[in-house]
Image (cartoon, rainbow, N blue to C red):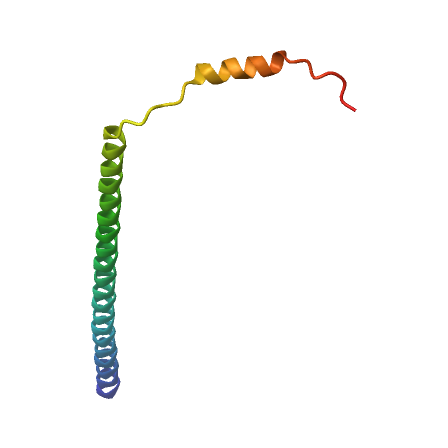
Length: 98
């Protein structure tokens, strides 16, 4: 009976040892994946900051161009004059074509 209980204790200790090793390996794998995810998050944040700075740069250029166009006094063509010319052309009879 003593031999049976000692083998049971040995098996129990081996099982507990395997469980401890499995827990340690799982913890290390989890830490490694967490570090990889944190690294990827930092990379994505850097990319977003770069993209946002480009957008702001283009917005500033657009604002400068808009200001330059507003300051430039370009005469606008009169639409009323063109309407009168179109009415004159429409009033001319074309006759028969063909």
